[in-house]
View 1 (cartoon, rainbow, N blue to C red):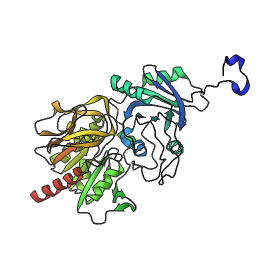
View 2 (view 1 turned 30 degrees about the vertical axis):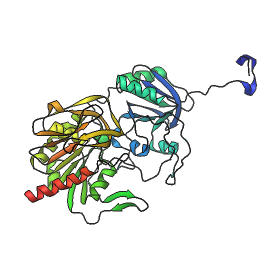
View 3 (view 1 turned 120 degrees about the vertical axis):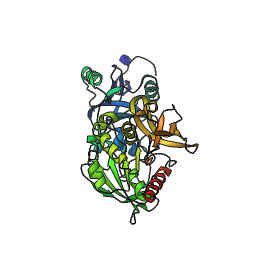
View 4 (view 1 turned 135 degrees about the horizontal axis):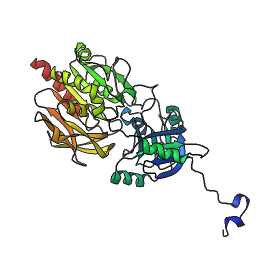
Length: 401
């Protein structure tokens, strides 16, 4: 067909779809797309996640509080959602993640476990999404320039106050110095006995625990608790602000320090003194992610903001104690500065992507930690052995007492 738009009439006129969502970066860059999920706007730090599966688990991981996730895999939402693949322990709580950036439109679900369309699930969780974005280009931008602050906005009528959105994105202070744990930690103590999902039975139950573990909840994931239960533990979950005296009064065989969002130095203002007391008491302690970073702080080390962070389910890590390489799930924008650690903190794991620290163990106390998520969900199960290592440490310490 030839001719200009003025020469065409009626249904022959080309109609450009109007953007109904924007991603406005702090430097003023505006990316236009099509809105999904909740309406409104939210501000956060944009990171990219390289996982190809498990988007529901990712979006309910409390560690993503304050962040807008760009999925590098183009087809997100195609298996729908269900009531089982949720990682937050607070089913009624607000989602910590601020927004989602997608390449392709969401298709109808095609999985026998699906109970709800992904778009409807996003609406119910209050999560704003934008599709139609060149996520590969955005990922390359983050890789080269670091994780930018941004505002994600969804308005079905396509009307936006662009100057106000730019001002909000530019004015947001970012995650450095921000303690986000209070918005995701549990409000009270509770017990956990659910074990991991197995087809076709579903989730199981721990009925004969051999050890008692207190898990400090900085934003803990359900699959961590399931793996502790499977390892033979009676699990008591306590809020992030629980004192060392209260934890030790529970007479735990071991203490677990969970993952969580925000700047570890900010959370460490109240958490590190507690961790120091637990370490000094000689209680076997296992930390992951934020818990790992705060163990580093507790022994005198420093943490630092990363350029692009590690987010995904395909991160290679070398266990230098065994020489083995494992593929891990990671989700962190801060890291422990290995050069700041004392001689009593031995490095046990190293990222093979950038050489950053991924694990330590103390030579004078029964304490170890890793920077990644050994429970995965989503991700490979290469690191499940660390829960067995924790149990071995508990049993060794008990025999030596």
